[in-house]
Amino acid sequence: MNPAQGERAALVFLVLAAPLPWLVDSGTLVHFGIMVFQAATLGQAWNILGGMGGQFSFGHAAFFGAGAYTTAILQLRFGVDAWSGFFAAILAGAVVALVIGLASFRFGLRGSYFALVTLAFAEVLRILANTLEITGAGVGLLLPLAPGLERLQFADRRGYYLLALFLCAASLLVARAVAGSRLGARLVAVRENEEAASALGVDPFAVKMRAILLSGAMAASVGAFYVQYFLYLDPHIAFGPQVSVEALLGPIVGGPGTVAGPLAGAFLLQLLGEASRALAGGATGANLVVYGIVLILIVRFLPGGLAGLARARAERAGAGS
Amino acid sequence: MVDPSIVAASALHGLATGAVYALVALGLSLVYGVLHIVNFAHGSLLMLALYGVYFLHERLGLDPYLALPVLLPVAGLAGYALHRWVIAPAGGARDENVLLVTLGLALVLENLALVAFRSDTRTIETAYSFSMVALGPALLPLPKLVALLGSLVATLVLWAIVQKTDLGRAIRAVAREREAARLVGIDTRHAFALAFAIGTASSAVAACLLLPSYYVSPQVGHGFVLIAFTIVVLGGMGSFWGAFWGGLLIGVVESLGGLFLGESLGQIGIFAIFIAVLLFRPTGLLGRPL
Image 1 (spheres, rainbow over the protein chains, first blue to last red):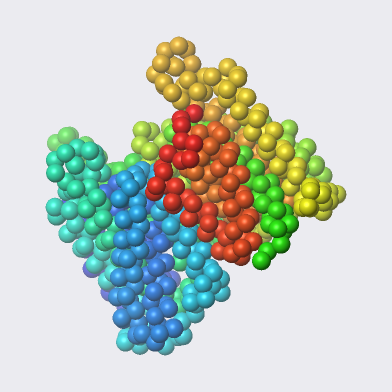
Image 2: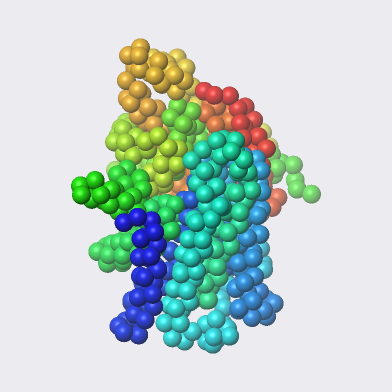
């Protein structure tokens, strides 16, 4: 399977998945789908910066949490409607990305240093959220239940399913547009060899800034969705390291830098997570043990992720014929 | 206005905590200086060592300080095996791959601990848990004083191993000129794994010194790993004495930050230092290779 086929397969998968909850009556399935779409969108956000651009962030929770808190605070404290809150959240994600991007890329941080600084930014935000009054400190924020499309809440969970699916499809289309654009080509050039790219007239700083802005905005939309779905938020949920880990796991497993990778990775990981939770009798952490093992195995044996596997198979088949 | 004696006591507390931080950071720094890898699992290994000390005390009644001779070889062997058979083969050439493998390792260890021990916070009680020692105007709990002195001794031992023994020379040779070291007959894979083993073993020492005045939970490594990274970056990645002074400094900053800004906001000082150093002086304060 080549990348273009992968993209098409991912889009077809989403189109086919859309009517599924109306065909199969299962709350588990709906929730599973929501979790997959949510993780895939977050993963896609990471993928644009980390997969295509090679800038490994270990702190995508900063964007996710900024989005989540922005919409929650606007709705609770300022009476702003959920739709405006949603768009404000996306903007907030971009603003946080602007700050982190300016700070780290201006100073040429790369590799492990960039990973560490993003992690530190997420931790600073977590501590702030844990301390400030406006974020409800450690107690967190609870949104009142008030179903209605104008409030972005759905009595029927299938509404959330469609919204999550829409976000996932949108992120996929954005990633596809980026991959096929000048920006995408420049991102790959910067990833492969920053000095060479720069010698050829690419401005690495401008390229990385665009990628992180897009990535931050996208991750923030997932945070805003999370708030609408669970109606609860606390500093650990928003800015905890598990969000940052979830953001990078999907694309790494699915195939970093490929458009279809994050969705494929998210689907496989959620499936494995559910299975391991069931096997361990619902023990917390069991799914993360499996994620850790998968991560080590993928890096060791399959550095291109599932997409790399598919590509290698296609090449073997091509060579054989 | 805060009473000066309270400030002095708080700084002394910070110094004691900082010495242990320094020890944890030295392990991380050694691994970075020699292997050029950022080991995300360092905190998780410390967490496991803390559980080791805890269970040796609870099940066998072994004093935490006497647990050291038991734990040290176990931690060393575990570190050696982890590097040789998990991290090195998977890491390959790319920086990011090692980051991911050690992240995966941290996920596995931490969550296995969560499944096995639940998320309870556990502490031990010893006869000397609440003994206080007067140092000038300040009172310091005895376990804290032991942690301070023990960490200083361990730091010197670590320094002597790296600087004065053949093992240390081999490790430093591999760190500087990998190919040349191989040509003069040093088994580089063995030397790399040994460096990792020493890094893990120093966490085990820290665990023994820490538990009498601290606690253990599956997530306990999280805080340490970030603090240790801060120290390593602050001192200059791979710099031995940089990490040592960085550790003491961070301990004092955390303690005084907690005093003036409150427990929760006090931690921000650490991360503010971390980000500022990464941005403005990524070679650290004493930045010089090992």
